[in-house]
Image (cartoon, rainbow, N blue to C red; front, top):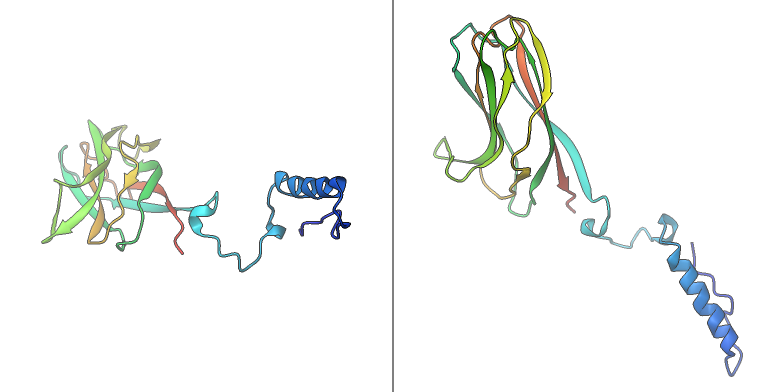
Length: 195
């Protein structure tokens, strides 16, 4: 909405009251806050200037059923994380899981880290640990369990290169051994908008 001045034309010489009324108009206009109608389509605001300059999205990581095996079997899965040099970091907002067939004994432990792959090997020396061996207790064959993992470090660094999320799953006895069973882990991430 346009700024309306009470005294668009001042007397000569200008009267103090006229000037004061005009100052009051300006103060009242901006003290009420800037609204959408005050902004031009060509204003060229940057993302960093916006209060809600983040977008959120989810990444789902999952493990499907396997043959029965002793406790302690480790499964490792990699999920590519596209990045360029100008990208900022991702922030983990939440991390939840669902497991069908949680096993008959022990715990299924889940570890999630982000890092780089060099020479076909995940660099554990420079990775960032996000979920640190969080346990899902065995509940029995075909037992469904839903829960939330504690996030140890919520920042996934932004950088160019072969960046991945790595999920290491150490299985409880007979976990995921029933046909159709699965472990599903969903990360809710946010990131600042880019131009």
